[in-house]
Length: 242
Image (cartoon, rainbow, N blue to C red; front, side, top):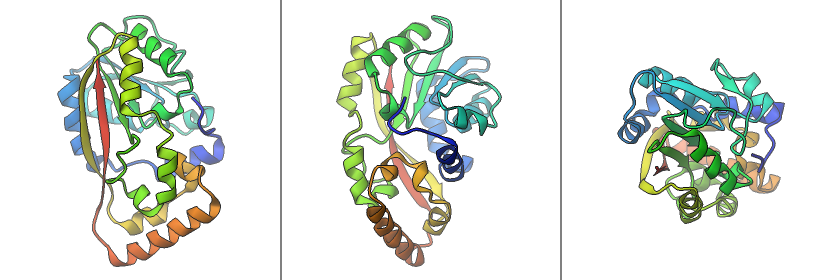
């Protein structure tokens, strides 16, 4: 994985800026539950787990045994989730046919060899186990706050693998599409809260725009935060394959 490198600075920024409050994820809990049919003790993979926030949530919500895999040493060092291992999407350090599902959250764009990753997921998953991909996909940015204030970042998003591309690659590895649905979340209580925790190193699209474009976006964001005190609701997509 490596569109950007999560060194110590980026990992610290990610932890400070990217964690969505657990009570803002109710729709994600419901959506994942519909497609995963969770049960206590089932074995789930959190691939590209970052600092382990989703692993902790799935453990608490579903009573699942979650194995987190994260390639960045700096991210692993900042994780509060105990079962986080070194590994990559193309080299998952787990046995064949050993998992009941895989969760890939906002990481598919970091996978340099997507066909190899799909093949590796096919290896470690039990037959019929789902892959759940949470992502911002090209052409699906209208309901994501980041792109409202940083329109230059849409060009970065457009370079991510699209839904058709991901589905096609996974089909070659033996997966079929099951569902694609938009899922809302309460990312923050207000735009002021977003301003307070914004870190350019925490967001791939912001790291890949110019400093001038970033500062222009922050100017727009600060101005809007003065006018708008409501909660920040973002919608990302959930792509499910089996």
